[in-house]
Figure (cartoon, helix red, strand yellow):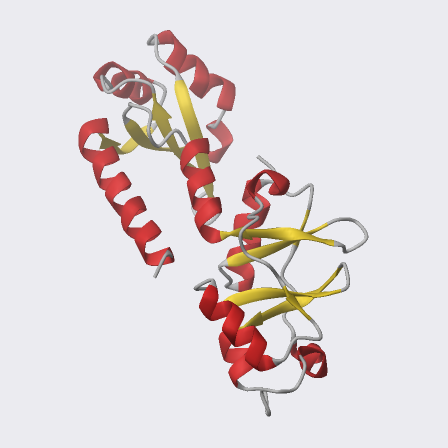
Length: 220
């Protein structure tokens, strides 16, 4: 899933000739606190409501303050994970998308990224979730997948986190089944430590509730 698939057509950018007053009106109309700024077809940067409110006077065009524009963006080839990384690094809720010539193509919202992330991670699919840990030197993705397949199950999604201090790999997997007792026993035979088990009915309901709560927050 790449950036052009998630671009919003409903929120227009500001133009560098727009005044601070105009910028605030557009932000109010679309209920956003951040907007990209274009110079012709090119991306010039991003401004926040706070940036605009610090402009003196507000009748001045945005170009007079372009040196203070923030510069978050992703290229049109960026994957969903790249967009999420940019949003976190720049602490923004919208990510401008540009091509190789820095032409502005549109923006991707944090809400769109979260929805795409939920789809990518099979949030709506039934299945249990296991949190495992194993020594880094013993970790093998093919072995892990083989253990799951031996138990007539499938991995819907998988994440790893390397604990460098302890030289261990922490693995979170979502499965296509809630019957995980046999899988737990199998992993323990292969020296995986089962750190936590989340049954689909309980865990996914909680995860969905958090997801829905966060989506409501984004719309505030």
